[in-house]
Image (cartoon, rainbow, N blue to C red; front, top):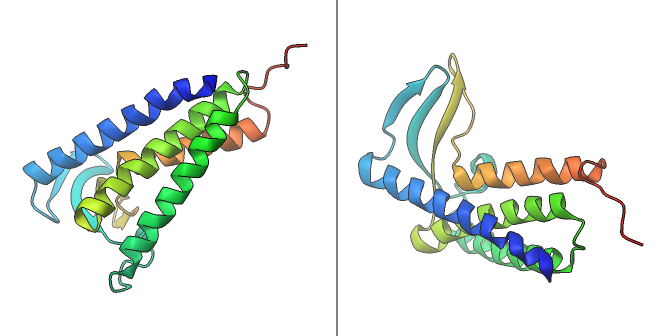
Length: 159
């Protein structure tokens, strides 16, 4: 299972995600917003739903649904990662990032019942839904998976 060596990337994503969330939680008040750069604020919010606050007003059952889904997906990704061939490096990196992001948000759901989000990208009065490092790792992983599916990073298999 040589591709499990990429799990360090999952651990890095989890550490950066949880460290940033703990920092935001300890230094900011809920809904506080700090301008950082044009088009970018740090804005502390809680997300009880999924991406784009999907099902955030569902009444509480979604916490366990999304937590269970994250456990299943994380298990599947770990098995997939373990079965990759040594030349499937880009896919391994992509899966490790998605895994790290999924576990980062899972930790929040289990510990708090919501996910801490704080990255606020905006233009004039339009704000993208707030997100976090875990969401960024998942997004980057998915982009790399799509790129890999189009042939990026493919090498010939050894004879």
